Length: 163
Image 1 (tube, helix red, strand yellow):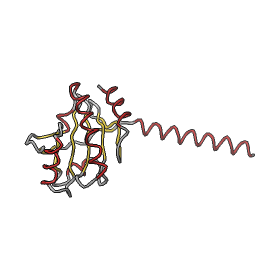
Image 2: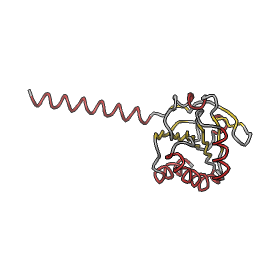
Image 3: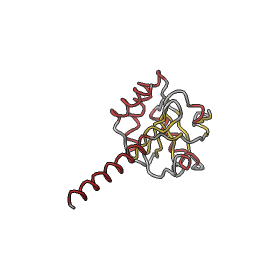
C-alpha cells in the first residue's frame, strides 16, 4: 500500500513537473505597442522584430533602476552593433523633466520612452514593479522576464545566443 502511494505520488510529481517545464518553455508573442521616444522617433515593438531587443521599465526614483543603467548601457554598447536594441520605458508616475535630465546627464545610448499614459506598462502585463525587464527574440517572442535586476552576466550570454 505504501509503495503504491509512493509510486502514485512520484508519477504525479513527474507529470506536474513536466507540465511546468512545458509551460515555461512555451514562448508567447511580445505585446504590440508603440510610442514616441524622448528623441522624437516612434518606437514600435513590431518594427523591432528581426533582432532581439530588451524592454526595461524603470523610474528615476527607483534606486535599483538607477544602479542598473550602466549595465543596460554596457549591453547596448556590447551587442548594439550586432543588432540588439534596448528600450527603456520610464513609468507614467515619473516626472518627464526628471526623466529627460537623467537621460541627458547619463548619456544613455538607447531609446527612452516616457510611458505617460501607461500603455506600455499595460501592454506588457500591467507592469507595476521597477525595474522589470523583458527580453524578446528576433521573431518577436518573449524569452525572459526579470522582475528586479537581472543577472547581467547571464543575460549577456542569453542575448549572445539570440544574436
